[in-house]
Structure formats: C-alpha cells, structure tokens
Image (cartoon, rainbow, N blue to C red; front, side, top):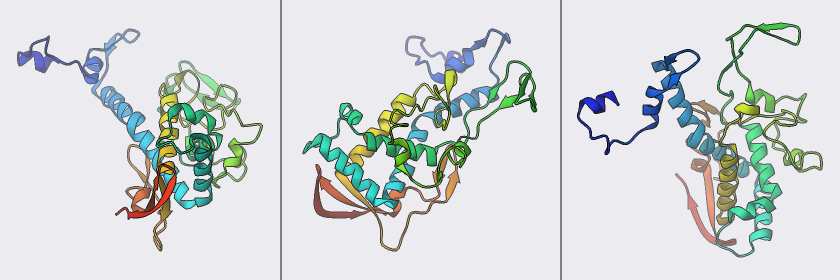
Length: 263
C-alpha cells in the first residue's frame, strides 16, 4: 500500500487486497503488527484452505469411484431416483441423497486433503492426561489422517466402507465434532473451518453431476496410482485420477456409446 501511495495511485482507484488488510492489521494484545512470516503463513492458509483443499478432496473421491465401480453405480442409481431425467442435479436435491453424502464423508475420512490442521497455541500451562505438560504458548496440532485411520475408532479403517455413515447410529454424523470427534477434516469446535458447509456442498454437487453425466472407469492395464504427493495439500502422485480414467458420456442420465480417454 505504501508503495502504491509513493507511486501516486489515486485512492479512489486503489483496490484494497487481502494482503493490504494484513499489512494494516494491529494486534491489540501484543501491540504490534504481523511479521512477514505471519503474513506469508496467513496467505498460504488462504490459498490452501479454499480452492485447493476442495479440489484435492474431489480428486481422491473420484479416484475411489473409479476403484469401486459398484459404489459409483449406486451413486448413479440414487441420483436417478431423485432427479429423474433432468439435465442437472440441483443443490436442493442433494439433501435427498444420503448415499452420496456417505461417499463424501468416507472420502474425507480416508483421504483428508491435509494430514494436519493449522497449528494452535495454548494460552496457559496445561497437563494432558496427567502425563504430558504443554507449556504456555506451546504449539499443538492434530494428526487428522491418523484419526481417520485409527482401528480403535473405526472398524476396518483403511477400507472404503460407506456403511459406517449409513447405519442408524451415524445417519446424522456430526462432522463438526460437536458431539464427539472421530474425524476432523475441517477442524473442530470454535476454530473449525468457517467454509466447511460450502466445501461439503461443493463436493456433493460436483460429484453428483460428474457421476450423473459421465461413467468413470479405469483404463485397461492402467490402474490409479495411490501414491501421495505433498504440496499445499496431500495429492495423488498422478496429476489426477482422470489421467488414468476412461469416461463414458451419459446424456442426462442416459448412457451413450460415446467414449473419451483423458490423457
């Protein structure tokens, strides 16, 4: 902002950016401004916690639908029962698709986009389970992926099992951790990701329309590579599941003979 002012930019023409607000932010308790490292960290959070986290989750979910065609077929059947012959799955119809939601939840449990949440700090000395002393201002984090893979919490945790979110007990599974914390892809409590509702809506909407309009299959002799790659989020080693998939166009729920190989 100071650089813009020095260049004589008209204030009425100046567009305030997110970085500008961070540069001007004053921490009242510490009576100081953010350091460059803190600003970079917040910008990284802004990027990785918005579009990339959702696209990464979508990639893993679609890879699992390629891996498990019977699951993909059940999603398709559920969609057809709700939307009929309509061209597009509408967002208000997603509430009538519990199997689809179970696919999303299982995908987030098995392959959370981030294996950790953002670091937090304790405000005072704390003793955990009468064993571990966490000093004031000490950084703490949560192993999100390990929580979803814990056999003490989940039966057969590494399997892609939707039943765990479809039985009577977990029909209204609380992903916010308000009742109990079994998985936390969006964090939990007061510090939960403020965009988790939008992320869930986007994932359900995108997966529903991708399955409704296309049939996704593995290319013969070329299975999906499940190797992980660490970037902003935990990606598939392959550029995307679609790179190893064959799609069959479905004309608004009616399978056609048109096939396209994604390379």
